[in-house]
Image (cartoon, rainbow, N blue to C red; front, side):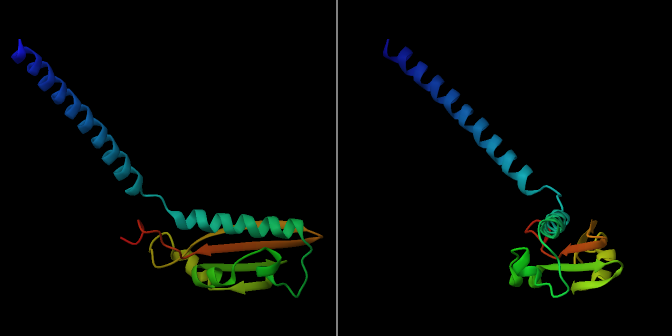
Amino acid sequence: MKNKAQAGNITMIVVFVAILMIIASGIVIGISAFFSSEDAFRKTDAEVLNTKIKNCFIENSVSEKLDIYELCSLNEEVIKRNYIIEIKQNGEAFYNYGDTEKCLLGDENQAFPICSTSTLKKDEKTFTITTGSNQLSKIEQK
């Protein structure tokens, strides 16, 4: 009788180990799928910054002596390290930080930023806002 009881325990251990292996393999597959994705975060960064500046211009009055960092609550250190901003008013330079010519090469080479451009009409003025992101995620740095 004792041997039959032990056979049931051994069977349950095998089932328990099998369930643990299924759960562990699901976790490994999920983590590897998340971290190996080919998402381009630079495009999203550029679009988010562009939207933030555009909304800032809509909500605030824009003058010639523009402090975009204070007006739009942007961190100047982060912008100058990782981003490009070019704003044109009626086709003429209004604010510029960085070289937007590099945006043309962003899709072909990871060393260049990926950019986003939008247009805003306010107070009979047309603003063209171009933002770019150089910030590489750990996935893109590989």
